[in-house]
Amino acid sequence: MTVSRQTFNEVMVPNYQPAEIIPVRGEASRIWDQQGKEYIDLAGGIAVTVLGHANPIMVNALTAQAQKLWHLSNVMTNEPALKLAQAITDATFAERVFFCNSGAEANEAAFKLARRHGNTIAPHKNKIISFFNAFHGRTLFTVSVGGQAKYTQGFEPIPGGIRHLPFNDLAALEAAMSDEVCAIVLEPVQGEGGILPASKAFIEGARMLATKYNALLIFDEVQSGNGRSGHLYAYQHYSVEPDVLTTAKGLGGGIPIGAMLTTAKHAETLAFGTHGSTYGGNPLACAVAHAVFETINTPEMMANVKARAVQLREGLLDIGERYGVFEGVRGLGLLIGAPMSAAWKGKAKEIVNAGLKHGVWTLVAGPDVLRMAPALNITEAEVAEGLKRLEAACAEVTAVAKVA
Image 1 (cartoon, rainbow, N blue to C red):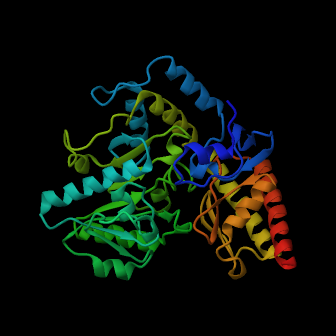
Image 2 (image 1 turned 180 degrees about the vertical axis):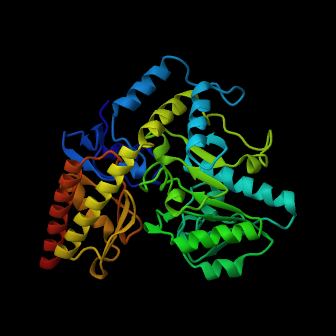
Image 3 (image 1 turned 45 degrees about the vertical axis):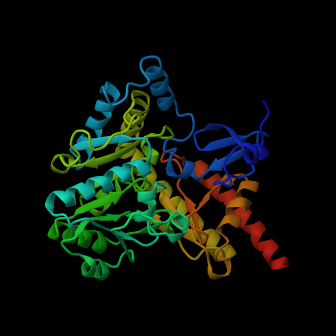
């Protein structure tokens, strides 16, 4: 059977607008399309493929487990899930783990835990504080907690008891706190909202306020976690521990898996029968995720993240200065955003499209920010080649703009 981009229009729900190319093969930080054209992957499947494509460590883990056991359901536990949970709790603040299949599901579990936490204290303690431009998933609850109206329009009525505040505004957060608040939910680095890192003072203040009002501090590290920040999780960069942390994306390196991490005390809130997931923690996903986790949780990998982050930042700043398309670089580790300059506001997707023509895959974080979230093990040579191709793309689009 031959398929093309047109096939998508004929058989798929039109909630996505994928690129014209169809990748068919990948190796490390390179992919090839149906025509055999090569691309440097600086997108990482939206911060997912942390070890690149077809990584032998992942292939071996997948193959070995596939010959043993794929699925049991939550009626039984399994060795890969227990081993992965043990590795995560050994390496983090967490003492308990709940496995699911995606970041949205991890956040759904966290928000349900927050509501039950509040209800065990007082009936009125059910307010969730989140922040404008946040993104926490696409279920109705998680998209409502996220602070972007464009994702809830047309889906009303949306869940209530959620208040949104300006990000990084500690005074606004302090003014909004009360005994009715059951949770403060934030991304240490807002991803879809434009690659905006939280300030240390904001993170520290949120921790203090959550403790003062007996509310849970929930860190959404779906995108910033699993080594992407240059630490195993971004909370370690800030030296502030949350009560609950959600993760997914890079945890499985491309295999769907998510997790909610918390303490033993707060885990008791989700007692038997209060939440569940049929596929969550299945042996196949957990075996691969364990191999990924053990590979990224090393000093050598974190050193590469930091070195390649410097290389990417310097390259983007140089391109921005020469072609006038960017007005700086921000982010944490290998979660990098290049805000478009005033003349190029709203045109980040034009750079992405031009990049594909020149053989480099990048992302947007809204219409005004070019985003990069490549594999954590991307090499110096791959970054250099990706920047070379991105520069060619920027040279083309700026030349065309001048002629127009």
